[in-house]
Image (cartoon, rainbow, N blue to C red; front, side):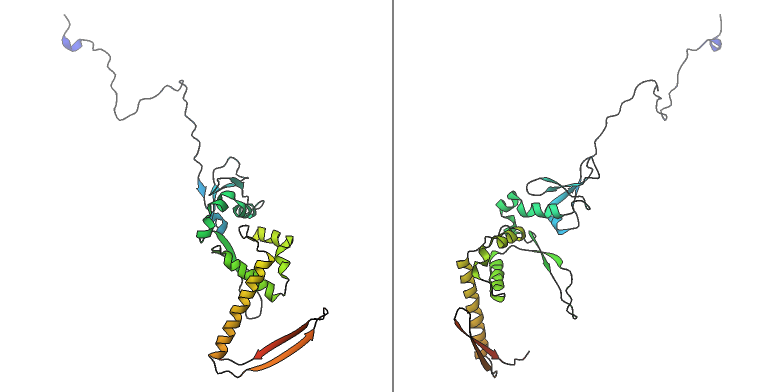
Length: 231
């Protein structure tokens, strides 16, 4: 009878827990294709306060942006479209105009201010953000009518209406009667300012007059006051 030391032991496979089991390379392996998420990013221009750039688009040569108000997707290639199409859509967006966001939001309208140097040159306008103010626009139109001696019916011309539609589509074009009243109000305000200034000062005033007759046989007289103030 053979001893126990010479007995044959069954084959035992020892697994090392530190090594991962090997997979058969002949088995097919499939990995799901995960589509990268679409991210959105703001641009540098002030118009991007109202749009969001879409990244990870299918065609990188056709960048797109979405309107924050109506969600419309627009092309915004820096060399092809630039921001012109975005500005035009922002001015004509029906959802934005109907909601009235621009009337209370100080970031709703872009405006530019020019600086004049000592030599008289004018620099490029620095773009800022301004609040929509209908009364200020009406006052500016009335001042233009007065300073340029334009007829009151100028505001009813189609060219002026088309111009204001592009500049500020929310502004209601006043009639010639309304703009005449605005001009008269501005005249009375400036007249009261001069009267108060002369009454509150000790300036020596020199008054000159000039009279002429127009081709319509109408008589005019212009009164000019010359004085030296502290400035």
